[in-house]
Image 1 (spheres, rainbow, N blue to C red):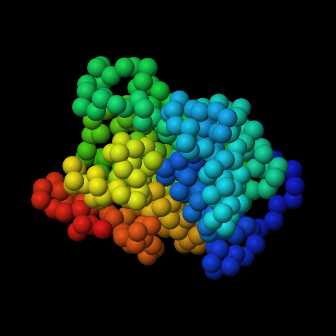
Image 2 (image 1 turned 90 degrees about the vertical axis):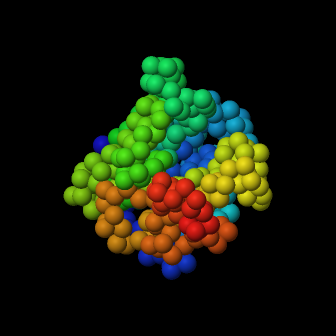
Length: 321
């Protein structure tokens, strides 16, 4: 159990334009994509955000992308109005996660929001969708489970004693796919399917365990995310991403990471967020609930589009933006 090194006090009352001022957040896996956007949007709302990952300005993780670093994410958080603190962390290493949580305790004495966004397994997927389990390399498959499940368990186990020290803490498990969608759609790779369904179940279980401390646990998924890696895959940028729809019209339902970032910030700022406890949520649904939009002013609803397309193959993505 983590013990406070400094006296703890309730978080101060925050102004309306910075509803998370005085709140302390940890975004585990904030190097790029959804994690970076969630960290920045928490900062926009005034939070102090510890951002972690394995790629720094002096070291590149197995993902192999040197262009996004946790230091840059921390700077973006600070520029957005919060305070960003980069802490290089491999969330598969319990001693590194323990050092991270001890540092947050020592420096802040509290943790209000934990976002479990660690993944970094895209490089293990190529060409494996649609293959039988025994046709997929076992080493790659098990690595997916380490990156997508074990990291979350290590982080949760280590950080929750600090988060539950004060009532009202929020845990956000990040995944790909809602509970409703994944329950009837196989993700065409058993290892990936397990890795992306586990966070849904983790949020459900943690909701039960956090109830007596007034905490809330939810699982959140973006839709078709225009991450840096996804844009690179299609050979486009955020400025001209619609060019990719010429070859793949369904890409028109995609969303920038800003949408899911705003979803998590809205949840964290909602005093009535306990109504979502244990729920599986998506960025499109939360955008409607809280009234925010993507960076371009649209409100894409990817999961509703995918369901509609099953019965009407001619449905247009534009009808769900």
